[in-house]
Length: 248
Image 1 (cartoon, rainbow, N blue to C red):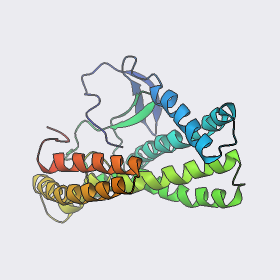
Image 2 (image 1 turned 60 degrees about the horizontal axis):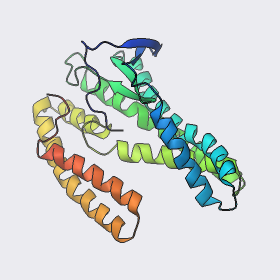
Image 3 (image 1 turned 135 degrees about the horizontal axis):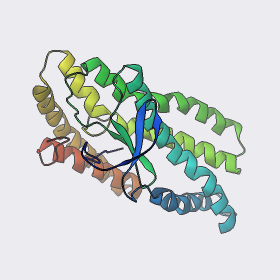
């Protein structure tokens, strides 16, 4: 979800296609699908843990089904951003494939030719897609056999499409909620610089709250949730302290 500076206008890239008029690009060999190769055994482990009676071969088969559901949801999340950008007439500059996953590229996040409303709609594209898919995934979950691979796929769809908007809408620059908050403030009369300062203050409070939530998760031995919350807390606090800047 967090998108660092990933490609500049002067970088040499190869365009492999277009999605909603946005160039789909790769840079060097960083397109190699490392994420998929890592996610597959992880999803196989999840499948084995959920139904211990499965053999590891069966679990690998289930992982081969659930991995595309999880990563495909992230792909569609970013493609929905591209669709929203195209709808408002302000397409993103590129989608870069990095280690098998898409990353949104805007060369100038403060582009004066893009109105605050257009900025907000572009940022909302991904979360809106996930929230539309979520009830379908929940219906699938309720209609599948608890021990079946179809239930694993439904669980993966529910978890991913709930997780992406929940995290993505946090008011942190670099993910969807940051631009939504920033450009909502600009629409109310703030300058982009004033809005950035307000976002930093909000992230300071958010960072403290996320740290407390992470500590509570660790106390309850929910290590994965706790680790994620602490990572988000660190990122929010780095924004608040000016250590990390979305764009120089």
